[in-house]
Length: 388
Image 1: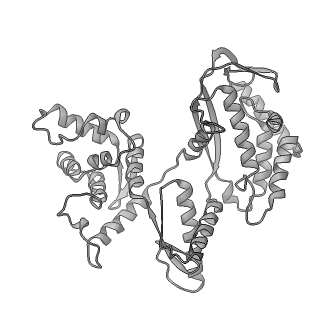
Image 2 (image 1 turned 180 degrees about the vertical axis):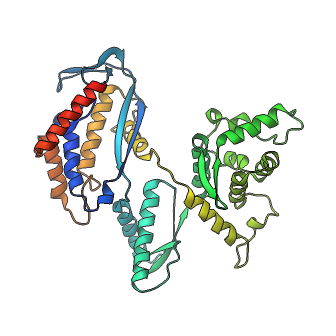
Image 3 (image 1 turned 60 degrees about the vertical axis):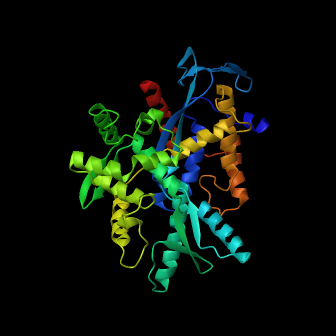
């Protein structure tokens, strides 16, 4: 608790954090590492008033910074997170160490299975890149589907259920832009809603084309986002085929249909046959990779993970009070500064003293502030006050 009292966190821009961030950025050797995203979101908190002695202030009223407070109770906290675009090597290092330890037992690791969290994808891509670089050094051809640890080839695989659920959950809230047969396309969940309502409104219950589709499968607010069977029903071959006849142009539906085709239970389709050297899977997979590579996205995973940490800090606290939120926020900042994942450090080259020095600088305000930077901060503060 004494350590938390040394950290001053109030609403608005905390320039002490930005000065600390500035010193971390100066240590980045590659300028590409300075490209970043600004991610922001709000999290619900329970209304509560509490006097915090360390700052001599009652916390719990709506506070927009710069003495812009009201008498309304605060029920949300708005948070901004800066996230770098470049891959982090820490998770890749951990994966390598775990695989090596398993191999030492005599077991033969042939594959890794993981969900499509951005950190997992980045780590596996880093391992693949390291393997590819090793192949290029000796003039060998790399197959792009695997990586090597201790000279053993390991295939990386996505968990199928997470892929299907992730596809559906993202598709509900986002339009999908991609290229198919060199033509830009857009797929939207609204297309499915329009198809469902057309079928329901122009047919009776007995003669509907898609009688198995229900409100619980189509309308986002009613969908169970966990059950895999629901996803398979919506992205079925029958839904895709009927939409194609109605719209006369559904490359989006056909593409999804073929993907689900690989895991469907019905028989008779060529993609559900065994994979051979001459089977149609290879042509379809080649087209699939082209489509997937044309898709680009950013996401809010970092800030959602942060909110999850807030809710699970200490004890499970799904709806923290403003005072709880501030305390958990401080604790998570300290955890970041004292961990091997601290911003601005490299685990392979820096030791713990560097990380603890960063924490010391942050707590005791020993960061040197350049004159130009200070003047710029003053100017920025003035601009912020003017805007608000």
